[in-house]
Image (tube, rainbow, N blue to C red):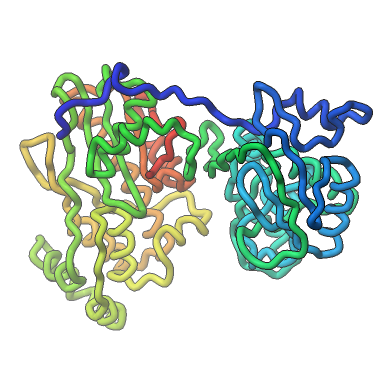
Length: 466
């Protein structure tokens, strides 16, 4: 516990935001005959741009004009790589050739984005919003088959300064809808900017859902939130604190679930009724070996018979599992997913099975806490989880159905814990943080499991997992 919680008098979250071009400036820049026509450095009190700037191209100082952007578009069409100084840094842009070798793209024509990726209204709206974030899109099947590629997703962003916007307008003439983005590498030409003062505009990375958006990567949040985060050493509590602060919940009773693929998990309860913050469960126990799991199950009722049957029916799987070494540093449910792949000798990771599957229902697995009179600091019965998983495999249940069961049953466990804590202490809301909640299926299942009308809170401007 910390000595005291941050309060409004000690921390202010106000911070001036830098945004790309506004609609007023854009209208002037696009209007032929206007003195600002094709001026990539146009800005006003509402938006940000390079001050007192000029381009430097082919070692010559040059003003921003249509002829320059026509030339740049022509060079790109001729397969030249152009290094460009933008408001968000210096990048190398080129015509998209092999998406397998690409990690980031600039969409130059939003109307044709569906030629490459699956178009979702919410994602398109966010992509072109004021923040101009980047989003991981699913590549459509038509493009994958036509170009014989295996890549599933690609990160895409839209023009977030007038230089890229005006270049995109000229690229429409050549029907170039996407540009490859590289941060380093060889290039043919450099469009530099000489200016009074360099300005940086962040490009946040966003995950879109139909009813919300979650921030995956960003430097745009108020930096005072870092002070809030640093109040706790444990990341699950630190993240919870930022949710409480951003949503002004210090007068509420909130149950938080921090479920992560990269850090240790935590379930915490905050309320003025208990004068602060307390753990619902102790850190999840992670076994040191598969042998420890098998021996632990054998000590449970009917466990010896179960392991004997598993060894007899799947001798190769049992042998491979037993001889596999495991070493995980994070006490998380995701770690249990990884261990389960070894125990059951699955071909794929559990999350991969869930993501690629169109199944609607998974098998039920035991997610439960050990019997205790306490409501706080309880222990999770991890052996019961693996015991039911082995039992399902013995029954011939498909790997994909068991995989979905791991995720679906975890979501149901979250729903039951919410009801349990609410019945004893009372809850006014539920907060969810950690990168597992950026998984579409898991997010849907968890929100579905919250049967009562509790308000669900996420981070607003802060990243969902720092």
